[in-house]
Image (cartoon, rainbow, N blue to C red; front, side, top):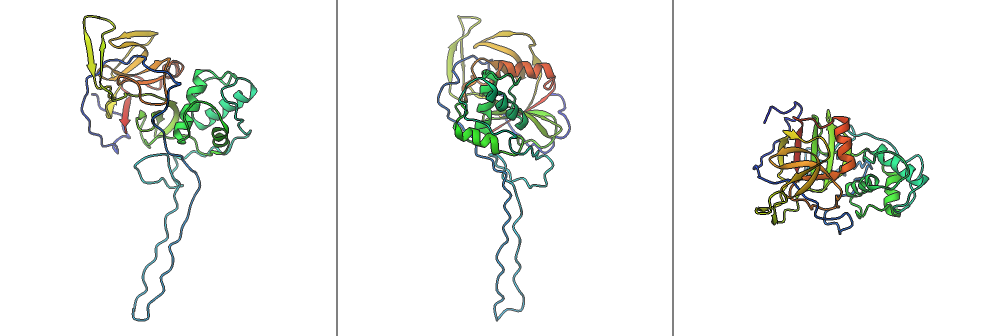
Length: 304
């Protein structure tokens, strides 16, 4: 692996290379979710510890400490981020309240799409059509806030979309990279330590599989469906259209370890479902290619 970009020295990652084949379409977005994320709050809480009364027999008063002011981040094992963190991007509440529109098309969907874009959840064009890209953006928002992840804008989701004030962010706070959060099933594009966009993703199911090779029916492919955690690098890519993999077709893949790739798919459910690859929507994959945000050599950080 070539030397990775600067700004990632804070990451300490150990992992084992796992030989995997490209993913295949094996599930639909309508299936029951099995992974969700914790709700992020932006409320600032300051608590001052009580003052201890000086006992008559002591000659020195005990010391009291004021609790630090913090803002809780999305589900991580890291300490909360202080409100002085410059990486916190405050966008404010929605200028127009989001309506519980389900999955319907129309002017209210334009308002929804604009709000998702403002918060950093990629939805493509604000065209009023509740298509696959918008569905995926809503699912990503629901995962990020630990809401029921069905891709529908119900009253609860609408209220959170209206009142949430911080732009989405991953755990990476330095460097330019792709961050794949397997715990929350989200993919983040991070530039100079700032999260630009978040996408719904589906990583390896971690369920062992045995399947006929799609390119050679005389072969049988076996594996554990694991997306390996670690710090990797995009080493090769296939730019145009669908490509045949051993386990099925994948769209415009960017490989970062062996046959494991970030690629587009027509099915990106709300839970881990792939054979090990990292799925995003085909529209999102086109966006990634068109913007040039993930060239060969890009670091890819996969974590739990």
